[in-house]
Image (cartoon, rainbow, N blue to C red; front, side):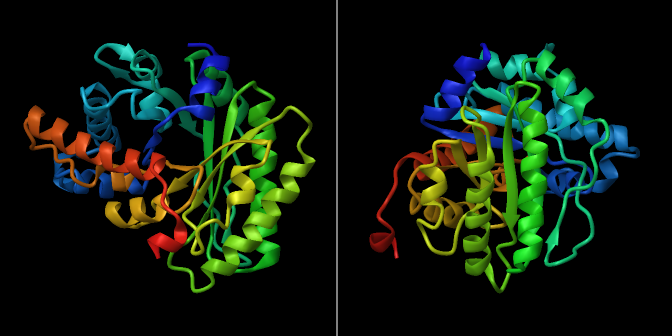
Length: 303
């Protein structure tokens, strides 16, 4: 599957993007949710081996295909691993699912109401290796905690700087300035963030496009100008801590935005399930998220 075909699938395909990119400190929590306790491993290598087994089981499931899952975001170790003896990106592509790679190395301490990304000194090498494996794009996450205009502007500027580095390698960046859904100033954060992204989009050279991964807004339709922008290939939403039913209901209120859920996708899966049970639970989650991504309701009617 070449870049142009993958771009077409992500830009116009019906479905959503699965986030299979938990890493570092979030891995034990993800494993515990999957029914694997901390005493199941004695080293970091064993821990990452177990999380890879979970992801491989998801990717190889009959319920997981390009009919409803148009893309998947991978952790670096997952990208470097195999599914049924095939490199993970190739296994995804064989199922019609476009692969992405998480590239950020975590977050700085909070300042000015935000957390910037830590430096990525080896990013160019990672991008070259990812592209050689057939990966289409990247994802990089920052977090916004409060409506501090200076901090939000810094987050967006840093995100676009990294995005331009990704574009220079012929890959598609997913820019992810997450707004903490527990913020007391969420609505203000959403508005400031939208305006800062619009400023940065206007600075992109003609012909360049990026993707955006955003928290679901307090006011449905807040991000319509981003969805409709000619320099945005697709806007996707993170679940941000919502349970899946609520995340899907909020998603359905926002036209043109599809899901890129992690925990909300995986929350019903358990290591102890039979294959039939696993496939049924995964298929049910996929169907629910697909519906929220593709069947929109008027915000007034949904309120």
